[in-house]
Image 1: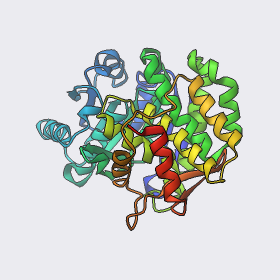
Image 2: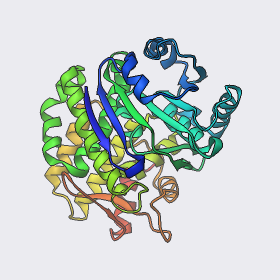
Image 3: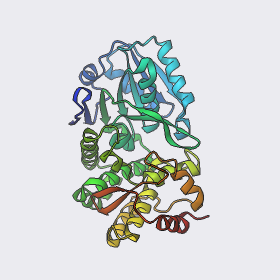
Length: 359
């Protein structure tokens, strides 16, 4: 087992990475010690991994809330379902939510925990690669709205993150590839050597080599943990973690939530961000090609769906980084060097979207 810490003073918490964590009685006794527990999961993950978690809880009673799976379920309605379950289980402020699932479950369970009695503890138990390297860490919680991705939510840091790598054995190939996107993003933001490592070890990752996956998860989490500790509420540097996401969220909303996986949409968004960076002279063209080639080799989409340039721009205008009507983008000055920019030529963005996403 490997351990990282997100250092946020009194709200600091550990990220534990390794096999067998869900069934570990000592770990769960330490990190999920509340007297009353509600496990939130979905109808895909629950049958696979809830029995293992029950072993780890060592006969302790807990209530369950099982939701339908999929991005389309990331709604205020399902937050209300979780809150109803919390009330029915009579959890008080000293109770705890255990979020067992991928990013959707982690986000909606986290938002419910943030809202219920003005905040109760949550432990994230991520079961997808994307959730283990990204969405379970950092305290962003929330749900989607027809007008945009993650428009409703709150910051609510977990009590702990237990990333059991055994859960990746049941992850479909498409979900595994989607999770690799967030690992690539982390490297692009802050670690050129890690990006080169991914180029060299992509085959091992796709083959689910346990040592390679553990190393990639650790390095991606370390990057995010350091950035979150520096800027918890995304006032400055944390915005860099949205590289590719302004494009990606627009793709998800435009295509219909669930039609394109989050990691697939962000993969196309990373390529768009790299290409725009190259077109305006910030990023060497050879680096933009490396990014496209790595994502393509991972089996990820490198071009967005043809949603139309105008609809894409309209959806991008709802991004949370927009200020004064200007769409601020995370662009690249090199592999491992990202920056938030609003001084790019608007016509370059429009031309790129017309070419790549035009109907």
